[in-house]
Length: 146
Image 1 (spheres, rainbow, N blue to C red):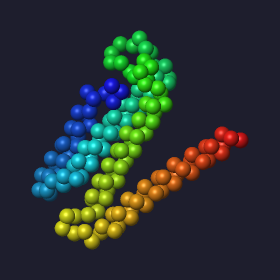
Image 2: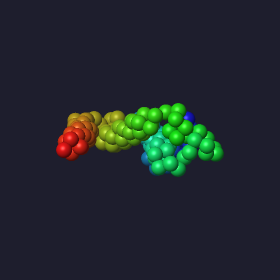
Image 3: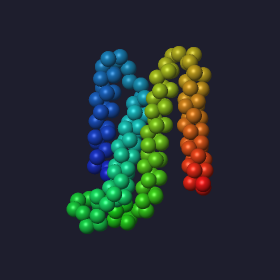
Image 4: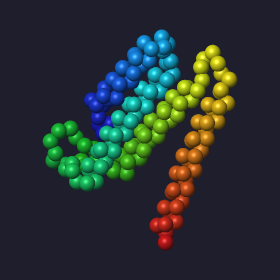
C-alpha cells in the first residue's frame, strides 16, 4: 500500500521511451541496461512514495481520518521506523541498479577488455559508500554519547 503501485507507470514510461530512442539511434537493445534502468526507476518511485508516507505522518500532514487512499504510517498499519528502513532499502536497490548501468556502459559484449576496470570501479564506489555509512554511524554514535 505504501509503495502506491498505481504511481509505478510514471516510473516505467520514461524508461520505455528512453529505451526506444536508444534502440532507434544505435539499432541495438542492451537488455541488461534496460532491465537495470527499469528496476532503478521503479525503486526510485517506490522509495519516494515511502519517504512521502513517512514524512507526512511525522509532520502531521496525514491524519488517520484523511480522505483518499490509506497511508500506512499515519494510520498505524506499519511502524514509522519500518517505513523509513523500507525507504532506504528502496533507494539502495535503485543505487545498485545505477551502478549496474554504469558497469554495463563500460563493457561491450564483443569487447571485455575493460572488465577489470568495470569490476574494480563499481566495487570501489560500493566500498566508499559503505565506509562513509560506517564512519557516519560511528561519528553520530560518538556525538550522541557525549
